[in-house]
Amino acid sequence: NATDLIAADTDILSLRGSANIGGESATSAIQFYRCGNAICVQEGAKPAVTLTPSTVNVTSLSFSNLSNGSPEVVKVSISTTDTSTTTSVHPILTVTSSFALRQ
Image 1 (cartoon, rainbow, N blue to C red):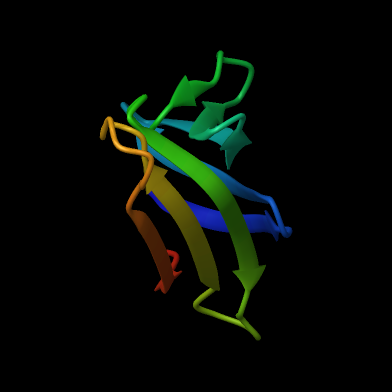
Image 2 (tube, one colour):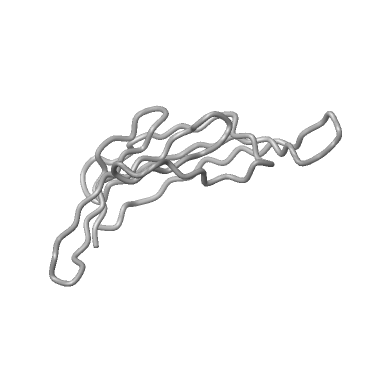
C-alpha cells in the first residue's frame, strides 16, 4: 500500500492511494477539505463523508506541501470552536502539524 501526494493547495489535500488486493492493483484519489463548518473526506466518486462531529465548528483548514523530494511532507493547520456549550463563549483550538506520507 502506498500514498502519493497529488496536491496540497491552500484549502484541499489531494492524495492518490494504491493497494494490492488479492493480486489486483487498485488506485483511488482521496481528498480532504472543509465543507461548510466541517472537515470532509471523499474517495473517488463516492459521496463525501464528514469527519468532524456536529459540536465542532471548523473555522479554518489549510494544507501546505513542505516536501522537496521524498518522503512527501504535508503541513496542516486547523482552527475550531466548540459549539456544544450553551454559553456565548466558545473554546477555540488551533492545531498546526506536519506529517510524512508512507511510500
